[in-house]
Amino acid sequence: MIEVEKKFTLTEEERERLLDSAELIAEKSFTDAYYDDEKYSLTTQDIWLRQRDGDWELKIPLHKGGADRIGDQYEELTTEIEIRNFLKIPKIENLESDLNQKGFSIFSKFTTGRKKYEKDGFTIDLDLVDFGDFKFEIGEIELMVNKHEEMGEALEKIKNFAKENGLQITHVRGKVMEYLKRKRPEHFRKLVEANVAKDN
Image 1 (cartoon, rainbow, N blue to C red):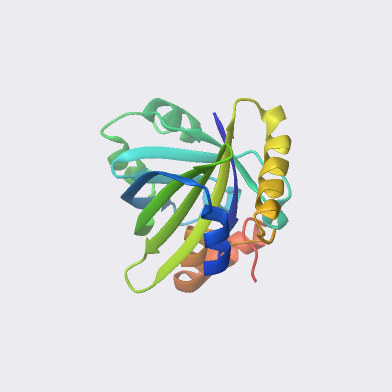
Image 2 (cartoon, rainbow, N blue to C red):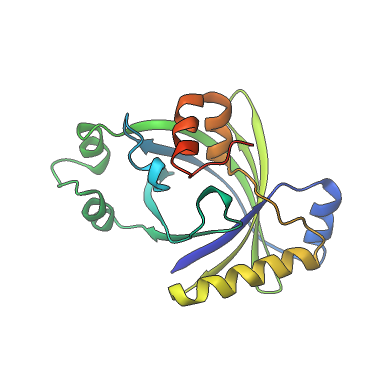
């Protein structure tokens, strides 16, 4: 499955409008730890390796347009063997130990409280992210597709759905990008130079 999503920062009025007639389907809290090496060899390629409540996931970009893109499309690898094969990490011990041996370590760890809704066939995630010394709110509208050829149509559907609900289609930093901009400026600058992040 391929995730197609668009991030939004919402005013109270926009949130109310978006959630009008939406169905709350889940509410949960989870902790993410994101990994990279000292050269930022994953994140400068827009590749995101995380452990969420003990489960590993590697997100590989499928979108085009670099930091100026409107939406995101990622392929998600969720099994240890897929992640090891992609990163070329042979199995010696557990995945975390083997990553550490290859120079990968945690650069960001935070807890998210998420409310998940469904509306008109779209998934809406509203997140309150706790980084310890600051909090950050963000929303996402998502569609899952089976084929690469369906990504463009899915993004257009998301944009039209957002416009119908009175939302602005603008560039929005995700939670990890927001953390890097505020707390790890050197890392963030490398992502801007690699056209993965936008410095505004």
